[in-house]
Image (cartoon, rainbow, N blue to C red; front, top):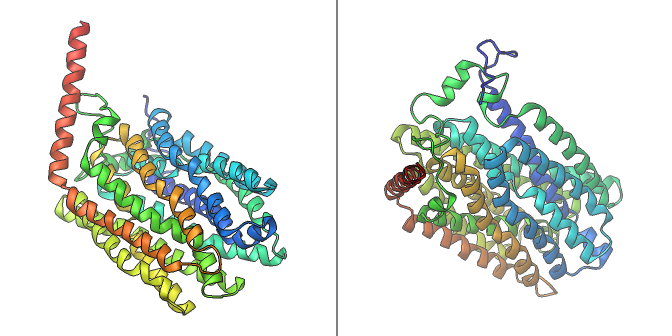
Length: 456
């Protein structure tokens, strides 16, 4: 492919990769802001349609029926067609269907709309990893993914007071936030197509200096192909214990996250009896803590990795320690009677949880060449988000009725989270994984040579 990199490009910037990262952050912030809308509006939607907590839990969970398969499909298509097209069109799809929420008129119609909304939102995690893997050297991979993923809780933090403000000013008209976010999403998608390219070699603004920063030095950008130019099959990587253990830990992380994302506003209103106006502040505080932690976690493991020459080890232990602490702290929330204590503890939990966010994506990015990164990360993201299919529904039924069992809901999440921590501690052996990957790559290369020889 002919490169469009110019030594004297206009504008002459050496940090276009950070501009691409900034645009990706805006897209991810919107992605989570759109998801947050239905949780904030939940009491009004439930009242309008006379839904029980169990029924609404199904509506929340059905989103993942569309979201989960497109975690993998989005990553796989990003490998095939490039992350620029996949993310741009995904943003358009989810924006159309977040706005379409307002035309839902009963239980079934909302199920259909939320499923289609999930189709659009699904690709964001794997496509972001693919984009960062294309644009950043390995020594900056955790930092770039951490900053990008920090936009997700920040999107929740920003969206919460905006949505509450729209509800208050429109006298609880829950449809207005969905329309507003749909329009914003279309505008963001247009900006994405204008600014972003699949790889820095294709971008007219990237200088030779920046390209050298990406491709040269210690822990440079991961190669797109193997040394002989071949591309290993996705299945070669999916057989590795590191991939499955990372996926299960990510599942535990996601169970806690989606329990919080789906039901924390309802918990604060029902259990802690706070007002809607106070929810704007209470709901935003944990998200802000998560945004800081997400960026910090990626920076810290990159910093350790540059000094040790082994970023995957740093990422492994960040996952193990932080998920263990989350499991210890999450269950007791059901016993707390003070709204302030509940918000403070939840903020600490979300902080620790989000310290691990960049690690799942970066761990896979450390071992998989960029030509297969989207598909492998998409598979891991698919496994993780199966928690979203189950967690909101399980929690919804546990808290239904007058005897809402918040302690059991949070306790189940804590146990699953703990199992994820232990799986990474026990089964992820970085040196063995690196040796196994090298073996896989040699076998794949040999197969290609044998096939070529036979064809001759």
